[in-house]
Length: 101
Image (tube, rainbow, N blue to C red; front, side, top):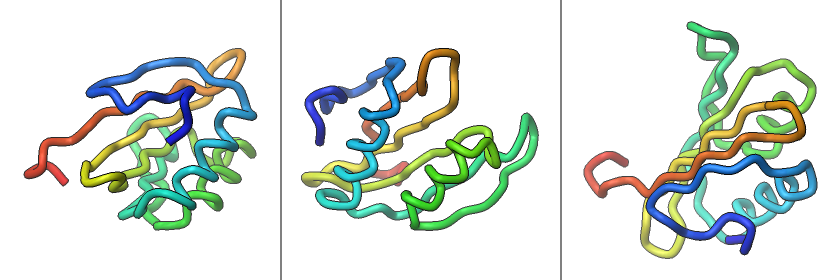
């Protein structure tokens, strides 16, 4: 994955739009995306898919509030959460225990 988002047990940062684009490219090229859960509002899920690019398009357009990408990379399971914040995108990455995936 990209150096801006190191493979740590937990990572939390605000990233810019270029980093968000690199993240999508990295997932498409180097990971197996199991599902993308879209958050439509405070108490509503908008949908589930495996198309990370389409979900990010909806996130950027404000059609969804946040997304979670559940994926596998180099033998580990990960969940990245992305939501809009002032000045960019808040990204929280966590490595999942094998039985949580």
